[in-house]
Length: 387
Image (tube, rainbow, N blue to C red; front, side, top):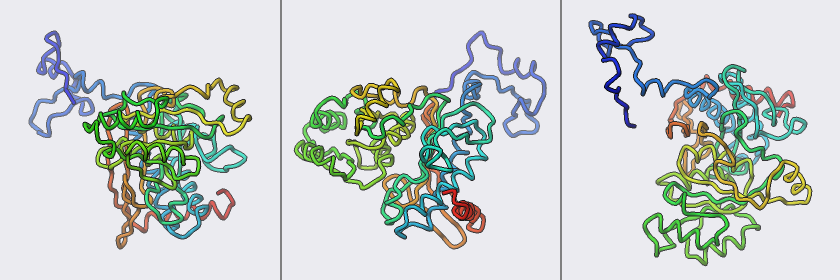
């Protein structure tokens, strides 16, 4: 980060100090009681201050409490073969904690419509109602089957952006996706043949003649048989995943994961959530809606959506102030899962903000006795038939 220096016309530090009132709230003195206080008025500091109508930069660390709660509440169900109970526990804990976050949020991507999902339904108001209006996308468990089977890469996910900035995904549930990291972000195009996109990613990696240097994540579904054949024919490697393409999309943009691309058809909501993270990571997601019926085609037309158009990251989420948080439930490529160590519960989370381009890897230790409230909230919600 480059710090801007005051211009020649700016008052000197000494002049600022002399002119400014000696208020402890407006000054710092470098930790020395005998130092002359210096006014914090430089341009760099001003740019860091929250702009009216925008989500607060401190919101990121508030949001991570939400995904931590969902991950901890669902962790007792890991490997127990009951994905509904795991999801119900995560939903209840997430809903309980999200109500304490300082934001005026509306769920744009949630657990379904109001008549289908008593908690975190689309259109539900969340947060404490204070602060700017924001769009909220939640996936209490991305990978419920992974959780139920104790398999890798189950995570709890949440994304937030400025009000009205997220694409409404309700018209068409699936979309064709292409995701890659910053190096090849300007080179790929979903309309190109699979082999050509792989070649361009290999070139961006500095290995233009070695397609086997590229690893592609693909959901293991019958609909991807021809895609898998094309990727193999191009000479690239493949990592098949059974669920959890949000984690796969982020892995494609993160260094050190061994993943270079995500390709294939997955959920539109997951694509929008991924876009919030990709804005902070500097990669790209391209998508094309994939209607499964005439009804979905009609719904897309009614919503003004062109199913043949290739959507980019900015089409999925407008603006440059998005937040993304994820906490691991099971161990995976991105995050460690929830672990129990004596009287402590250990969590690992990613926290991102696009405005600053900051990605934080957060390891937290929670006292086991004080995390019971998350589990109890989930159990109480189940007793009341709310999840």
